[in-house]
Each structure stands twice: as C-alpha cells, then as structure tokens.
Length: 246
Image 1 (tube, one colour):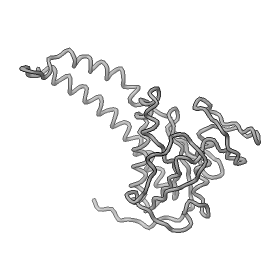
Image 2: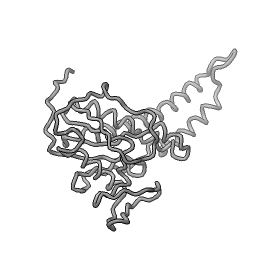
Image 3: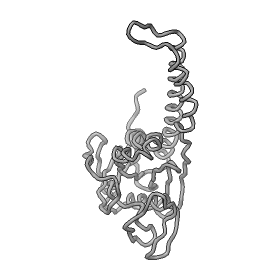
Image 4: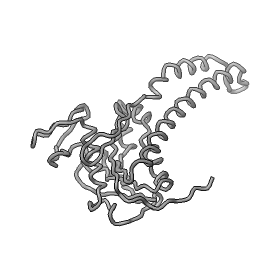
C-alpha cells in the first residue's frame, strides 16, 4: 500500500512522554495534566518460567552434533521454544504499535528523551527489564509514524534533566535516585509522581516559541539526525533537541 504523506500539522496539541520500567509510558500535556499511563506488562518476565521449561525439555533431546542427527523430538521441542519467543515479541510489538499510533493520531507534537539504552544495559540488575521494555523500538515507531500522520517528534537531549527539574518552579535537583518514585522539590515544596513530573517538563519543550523549533517549520528526517552516541547515561542540564517531522 502506498501512503500519501500529509502536511505537518500545526503544533496545537503537545504531549511529553516519559518511559520507565514499572510504568512503561507516562504522558502529560504542558499544564501538567496526565493524559497517558501504560503499565508495564513485563512480557518476557511473565513468560520466563514457561520459556525455561521448554528450553529444559529441549536440552534433554538429542540435538545436532558431530556424527549426530537431531531427533524429531528435539526439533519439536525447539519449535515450542521458538513459539514462546514469538509470543513474547508479538505481545510487546502489539502494545508499542497501539501506543504509538494513539499518540501520533491524537497529538501534533510528541516529545521524548534520547535515552542511552546501550549504556543503561550495562546495569546488570536492570538490563533484562530494560530490554523487555523495548524503549528503542518505541522511539523507532514514533519516528516513522510522524511521516504517516503529519505529526512532529521532538527528541530532547539525553542530558536534559527532565526528572530532576521541578515542573512547578524550575529548580533542578543535584541528585535523584532511581528508587525515589515521588518527586519532591525542596525549593517550593511541590510534590508529584516522578514520571509525571518528567513528562510535564518534556511536554513544555514542545510548545511553540521554545527552542524546540516547533514554531519555525523546520524539518529533520530520522535518517538525517546526528545523535550523540558517546554521552553519559545520567541526566545533566543541557537542552539540545532533535526535531523529526513529516
């Protein structure tokens, strides 16, 4: 099917989306109202016991080797393992497709962070959960669907301190540990959900007239982006943005 490329929509409806592990996607509009929340179904973790069982059964069958022909029971067991992997991948992809399509259809400007996923995967205690969340695929789908729906995707620099910045007064925390799920600002006393605070800050980067470029009519295709591949995964305080529009 050949898709017609629509004109880029005016930036009337803006949403910021923060991705996480316990809550997969949290979306907010610039005034701080939460408009999207998608809990993480943990597709791989939920299927882990079933996968381990099928792999254990397969390991007991006669597989290929020097002078050995894999048995029919081994082949059958391997197909069962592959089916479990396929079910996990299909469930994960369906959820990402549903979420990204909803965002592209309902919002003119979508703002997300440029996460250093490769750096985060070095944290062995979180690597499995980060891989299961598939943040990279979420971004990839948003990028190509901007062309389909005429929306604009803005990617905030990975150093932008969306989680550490108070969405009420703008004060920036020096430290915010991963186990702090409620953001509390010592400067003004404001408290809110950590992910909602980050999503609100991201949404405000997409407002016309900011340095996001949404009011300038600029166009940068995903394949023309120059992304920083060497940055540290922790947040800092700069605001470099990449604009992806239809």
